[in-house]
Length: 100
Image 1 (tube, one colour):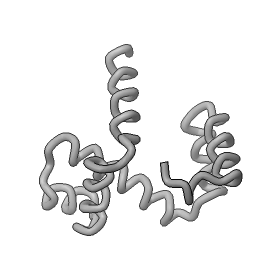
Image 2 (cartoon, one colour; image 1 turned 180 degrees about the vertical axis):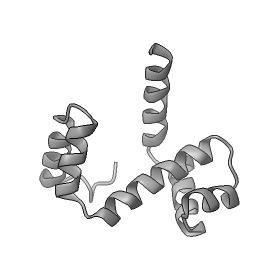
Image 3 (tube, helix red, strand yellow; image 1 turned 30 degrees about the horizontal axis):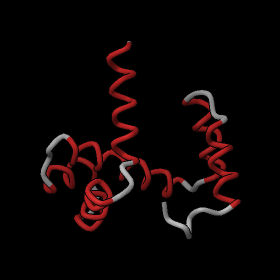
């Protein structure tokens, strides 16, 4: 974990996020906390990560998401050398889909 990121304020934000119960509450909270562009950037990175994990090429990802190659590279670096946060979430979501 990045020591610069670990602050009391970030802890408070994450604790607030953990109280959200459904998509509707997420929309309500994140629309207040983030700008539209910030939310779209976060969601774009998540989509890029999913596509990279599924074996899509940079070109396919750029065409589908509109992400720059710099963004795709940054996400790819996180997937390969980060804290495995994307993979943790992907595994949990895959588990939910198979339980449904």
